[in-house]
Image (cartoon, rainbow, N blue to C red):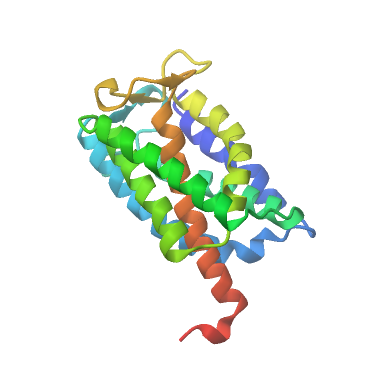
Amino acid sequence: MKFLYLAIDLFSVIIPLAFSFHPKINFYKKWRSFFIANCLVAFLFIIWDILFTKLGVWGFNPDYIMGLYFFNLPIEEVLFFICIPFSCVFTYYCLNLFTSIKWKSLTGNIFIFVLSSFLLVTGLIFYKRIYTSVTFTSLAFVLLFLQFILKVNWLGKFFTIYPVLLIPFFIVNGILTGSGIRQPVVWYNNNENTGIRLFTIPVEDIFYGLELILLTVLFYEYFNSKSRHPETIT
């Protein structure tokens, strides 16, 4: 079982990796944009992960990891921040390629305002619980920034697609948090979260994952637009 976390990482990425070369998809042509975006966002989240692991917000079961570490993180946890965003951005790219999704401006404004307000209020209510407060408040500010400052035009399609991304999310995070196995791969200190779980998954994980993928898509879209218009690069 020492290779369980590694196997989860690899199985989550193997199909998107293979289909990246499908002639109707050609996602491999977008790899440069993705990996630049991924490096930037993964760097931030790995620092976050290192700090929260040190603070005991969460930790890792040695029975399910190889024992190789980057600072205090198992190497499998570092790979998580590559494999999961890759799979999610691949799915986002494919659904965006074969479907036309667009929200009206008013719909987007209302949705983001309501969601951000909920996140901010919840983050303040649980201000003593660091996982909840940091995740909810940071995500709220990211959403408000994207919608009302940057005014990106892809948030509607992102939130339309995100429920699809939650399907593999529940499978992967379910196993990591103990579904179907004797003990969790990743354990959580319930003193630092709301204690609300969907099956075995802390509800905060949904918003943590949302922020991870949302920021990756933000930079992916930015670098992808630059690659389509190289003359704008100074």
